[in-house]
Length: 340
Image (cartoon, rainbow, N blue to C red; front, side, top):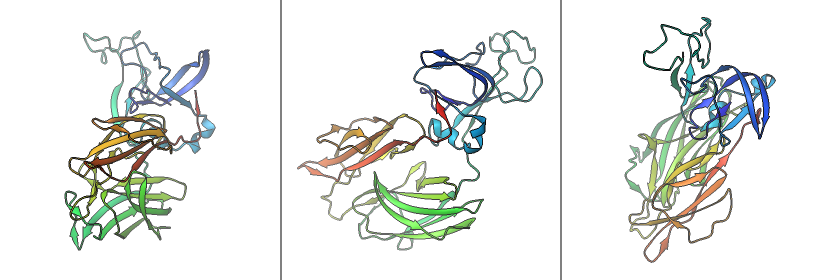
């Protein structure tokens, strides 16, 4: 498996006949079959840069290397582009990236082009059919659906209803948490064992000023975990809690809001604050480090590399500061592979 750093959503999955060390930390691979392959229209060779990452997985370990770990190597939740060839020059179905520059194939040749490739690009968003699933049903206050654009009071009580399902019926634990950065108010979802589909209703109360994400998590017996934020259109819903009369600066929200990633990656993080006219400042430390204030004034998306924590706060004239919130961007490599 090779991940090109410049385009982490496009990864190479290949079967190799041999790997030969050629010095300076480089390897030559004799490829039997490949999912993405070499540069289209090329001569069948591909050079990967020193910043790209590769793993080799022994056949004896394949049973331990579940397929959902492949996209985690690149960037969790990102579609992956594969090149698939339906038929090789030998008329054998295969998943490969084949080049036939020395073999004229009349019905595949494109006039005026040097591209003799048999491949086409197809984009997939990998889904683990055996992972537990989460569906959000309703979020209400006093029996009415909430509005993501409305400010609610810290005394308001909300009722969330969601459905959890698992084709294997081996869910073991779950929770619905209200989160700001690494601050979390978890609400356990119990009695999941043995259920294929089950609904849960959770009461949420006592939230302080801020914009809260609602994040559900469910885990099955072999450790597959599905995490999903309550959606608002194409983004995460933010439940806005405000003290009447103002005077409180709410803490900033980050998008993406941290997380665990399968490989080192640099992300562009946007910060926002629900208090009008507030200034946001931030500090980046190694994961779990201690920030030193004042920080850098936020004006445009921040580049954060995994293995670091983004700390931020907001303030208005006076100054009046919000509480400090932090977002962890962690790297959680999976087992069953060796990096080369």
